[in-house]
Image (cartoon, rainbow, N blue to C red; front, side):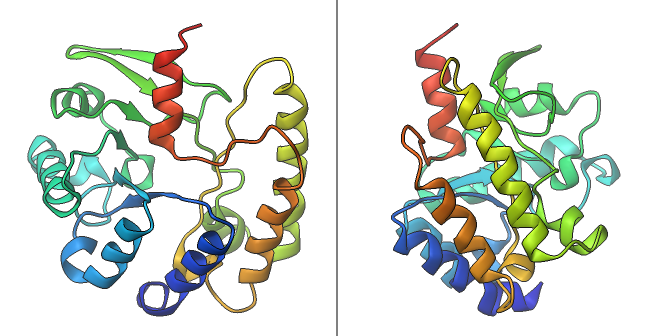
Length: 224
């Protein structure tokens, strides 16, 4: 993880900046304090800051989940100047009350629910949240660190996923998420594959490379 913050992150940032793309950073809020150059670089690049806990650790093990959510939101607000709209639970973890607590804290969309290729609303006691699609199928942790696939297999899967969603998107929009981590995809032997995946998708017309927050905003402005 230290390698990712010291070295890998900067490769990912350079690759996206070169292609004029912004990312959504699902950020442990403590990064703003422990690695301020990294957090500042993401802020300067116009990335969206998405709540992802204070420190990495599943929510159901915390003694006070409400306080942890509130602290994460406040740290990001102080650093960026605005409250985060989105939330990704560390490890996609939730309890039965998490969505209610997130809505009460002012979070407007979540990506923990890997259940669709399009946004949809989730009812909570504090109003509706929107689920913005996420995926584990293209996530570099399960693919690389757990399943031990090669980088070439990751690119092949990205292309296959993109081709299908792009074709279906001709009639009805689809959302495709790529979840990568600096200490995995930012290493020397993988970064060219990360770049290749985006170069492939950029060749097609009608693709919107954007953030979770902007997808959420589009969905709210265009109710189906």
